[in-house]
Image (cartoon, rainbow, N blue to C red; front, side, top):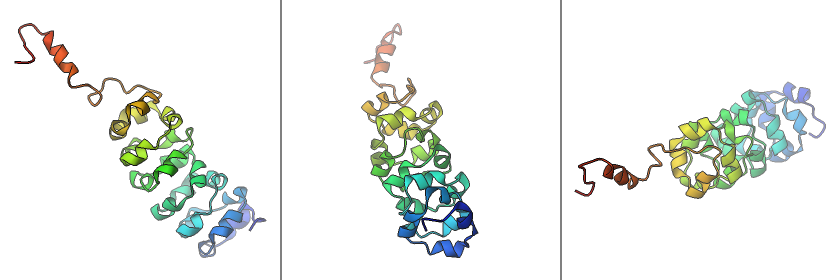
Length: 193
């Protein structure tokens, strides 16, 4: 397996790749992974997918990566998740991202995190949201922060401070008690009445 090239790997049938074991996947050179097609990747067993390293995952094209099914994504190792690129993360739906345990979420590269769609961020559980590191939060784009309301709502105050962009005084961050102060400025209106 170690001597395989991308060209040789691309010549294998989907059925031949389907019988690859975790150990065989681990032995494939990262460069050779570029030869895998979407059809081949979709045939890998979830157990074999566990063998991918971060360097190998990084080599998968966006199209080939998209062929991984939810069961396979759930089996990616923590190391493999560190190799995810922003282009690959862009392909993930909320359901697909939600299969990553908090420890795997924490290992996504901060530079790649901007690839997650706002909908995918909103689909994360409270525990997954709490796993985000300050570096990851700092890597989120303005668009993600503005559009992922549920995600931002689930952040702790400390996590919000790490955002690269202050979501500002949107309706979800307004202190309901501060409105009483505004009401007292109106003549003839007693906010406590």
